[in-house]
Amino acid sequence: LAHQEEMERLAASAATEVVVEKQVVVETTRSSMTDADREKERELMDKSRDMIEYLRKEVTKLRSDNGRLKEQVSTLKSDKNSTQQFNATHKDMNSTNLSTQLQKYIKDNRELKDANRNTEKALAKLEKQVKQKNEEIEYMQAIKRNQVCRG
Image (cartoon, rainbow, N blue to C red):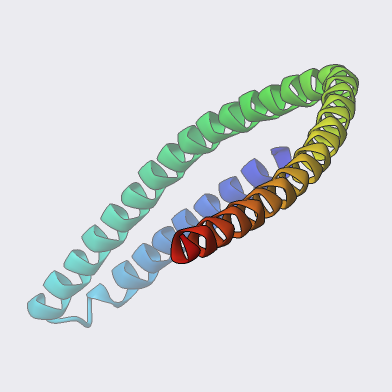
């Protein structure tokens, strides 16, 4: 930060020296200049001063913005550290809870698979019984038809 301020001060000083040197050159050559040339030179000097003043204001504004942004970065770093500490603290707890839940789901899934297998066996048995009963009904109907046809 001190180095940056020193560089900015040197740049401003150099710009001021250029303007002063230019004034000396202008004053030295003024005697040989026409009024139009002097007017142009004065306008150029005014523009140079305006530019320097504008640049100084911009530097001041940028320094202010830089300070504000540094404060924001500091706040964000602090928030990041707090979040990391919170996550580290709760990581083990969350991991344990998730592991417990996973074991419960695995057990529930195993029980459901067993229940499903038992249901499928019972269904197959019932389907076999229904098929046998249907065959018995067909057999009884066939016997009844034969008796009706004979009688």
